[in-house]
Image (tube, rainbow, N blue to C red; front, top):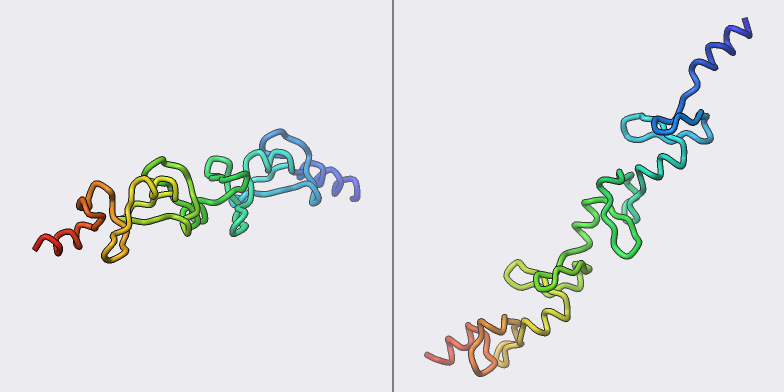
Length: 140
């Protein structure tokens, strides 16, 4: 009887879905679909988001400065500058008309209105360092 159990157990040994390495409880990793991998293959195909810990497939990994993010965390934490397209922290972006700018591009693209202290695009303001609203008020 013990031989039959051993034979059935041997037939039930799991193999890595990628490299066919024999797996046991100590070296078996599973994806969200229950597909089994050895440790090396699992980390070729999957990683964990550094922000929320969610498992991320290699095809969906977004990274920034050697840190890995799932799509949701990357979208919530980062944005692209409308001027130079560099990725930056969303909290450090200067926003104007639903566009985000890094500090460098915002310094080149914006001026501060001398009347109301609001940012405005350089090509929108008047000649006296006034935003369009204040320039309109000044010309009335």
